[in-house]
Amino acid sequence: MAENQKDQRQQEPQQSVIAKALVTGFTSGILWSGLGAIAYYFNFTEVSPASFIFRSFWQTDWTGTWLAEVLAVLIVGILSLGTALIYYLLLKKRNGMWPGVFYGIGLWAVVYFLLTPIFPAIPAFMELNSDTWVTTGCLFILYGVFIGYSISYEYREFNETVNSYSNQGRV
Image 1 (cartoon, rainbow, N blue to C red):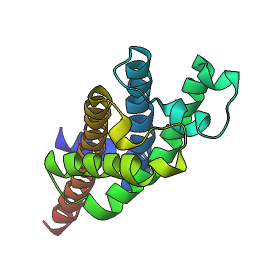
Image 2 (image 1 turned 180 degrees about the vertical axis):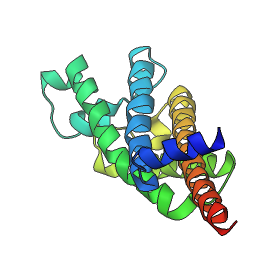
Image 3 (image 1 turned 30 degrees about the horizontal axis):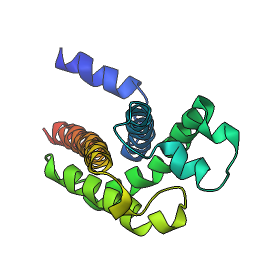
């Protein structure tokens, strides 16, 4: 049975850990910004992905439509490739939930404290209501944990597989 699993792993093309991290970044960007758009629709938050991406730069009717939200979610997915790559480069060896929690909090702070002046459609942090703080904070924390667990798990699995193959060759 073990020989069969080894043959199966050798036959399948080995996707690199970086490629899996990028897929994780895109997927998590789509998932969590999509949930952010839903939270905006149900008035849990005053901001949506389209608020950042489109309404800050264009004051047209289409930026308030569902199409703008869908396009903004896709753009956030693409931008998440960068955040996943940063996590991979800096924190891939960290295990557990806490590195992802702190990464999510850090991203939230960067977006709402440092980048808010770039986006005129987003009110200043102190002008946002507490529902927005809590909802977006939780979404960013979940985003960070999703990316953190996924990338760390893939990195650990890849290294264990490589180590087990090298140890089998020595026997």
